[in-house]
Image 1 (tube, helix red, strand yellow):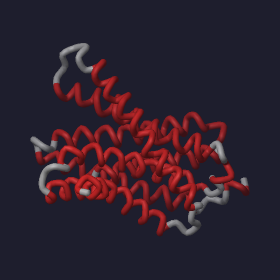
Image 2 (cartoon, helix red, strand yellow):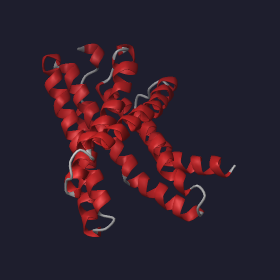
Image 3 (cartoon, rainbow, N blue to C red):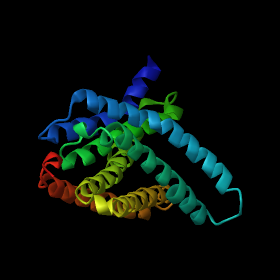
Length: 237
């Protein structure tokens, strides 16, 4: 029962954000579709984390590099790339290729967010597992910090890609360029967040950079939502 209870705590950040975004959706997506994308987001976390582990084991021991370079390689070129691609592939194969489920521009952002929340749910479980045998308060504190930090960061990065997916539906001749643009922004956002949050453990002043990344990204995503919400239905293009 203890492990079930702590696993539920690990899922809370993703579930709270999921309920928040579903309540804000003026044209709710089919609940079965939402559940399916969320579950697929959870499932792709496993291969993504395995790829990350293998890539890090291969790349980092090759040469002796300063810790900051190692962090850039690990978080910017491995972790962020693997995770953003994994979350995108869920929406690509389970939603975009089934265009009947993607009739509004904002749907692309919403489904990317749902995929991200599923992914973050598994990531939270993995990170909280070592605390399962410890006291309740440290586990709850970490879950709360991930609610306002890492889980929200997953949402922001994936929503950015979703925004550029929406734009690409209107400008198919610029699809590749737009998607590359979206991925670059999301990967940089994700990567630098991880780098600063890791370094901030020993250098607390870096939390300022973390707050700036989260705050500015949240502001931009709100603007993206406003823009895509004003676009006409994809079925009317």
